[in-house]
Image 1 (cartoon, rainbow, N blue to C red):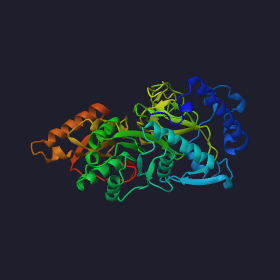
Image 2 (spheres, helix red, strand yellow):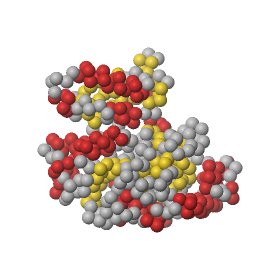
Image 3 (tube, rainbow, N blue to C red):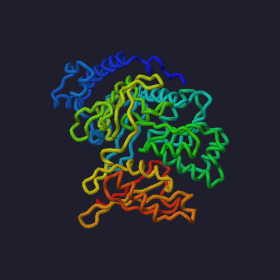
Image 4 (cartoon, helix red, strand yellow):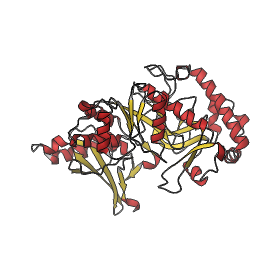
Length: 433
């Protein structure tokens, strides 16, 4: 499918980099001149806007962290006056003060433009009916997807989250062709549909899922696609960046980061040193055209890799790989680093287990323990010939081989683990309770 903005999306790489440098230079001068927070940060780091002479000089600029946004609550880092703002979004604030993100009209416009490009790259356009099952309100997901879908000429069904049976009825009756939600909620929706006697694959027109707001593995994608008969696309963004902004294209080989809107780096999570293409590290982003809440070298905390090659779709902008976890989600079990995404990756390759699991970390004496509770697949559970002890041993062996640490496994009945309408909560760490 043709690009939404081919002049920008297919811009030669050297031209794109010149544009990025121009935008970066303008941003740094503006913030040094008019934003107290950034001027202090740059002076403390011994850097002046005149020191930014190439695109690589972005590395001279200091990092920005989540704690800076919380310390600046509610709007001390803003660069726009209150009468220039048209929107606030606010994070959940579950670990302290929430983060408040302000938007000017221009900020909303570039957010919408970003998602128009993204949805078009997933094969969506005029004639599609997009069901937005992300939350509306303080959370950015619902409104971002809503505006992007409307911009490309699609029809939006703003269901938000919850009332799942009604959502499935509307999906059928209004001939929904695409859904935007978390992968865990789509799995839950599929299970509810089956209990209603509805097959999403056979009884609806759904053909695409725009799924994000939580890490999910390639194996999870394969299960969703095989089970529901759709193409599942990864969408990425955070409240601080504006909200969901970037997706995969129909090639499904990395998330396109629009270089005229964002400058992405991968850095070593411990040292902050830059890493090259294909090296796994922490995503760090500078939003180049944001007005209300400017972001320079923001350490997001998500772990991924960068691919700076041209995609087969023809878009020249850099891509990041699937988010493999978060720096602060990493579990250290007896000295071994474990990400929940590694557990999911392994489990999804075992046909005898289902799509839902839970990790429980505890401490027995001085020793850390890790229990993985996983639902048995419906077919295996109902098959009296299946030896569940053999399945349990197989899962334990696969996890030990994958994680390099011993793991206890508890097989549970299908449907017995908690379901979530928003982001799933896969880890319970009792060591700090």
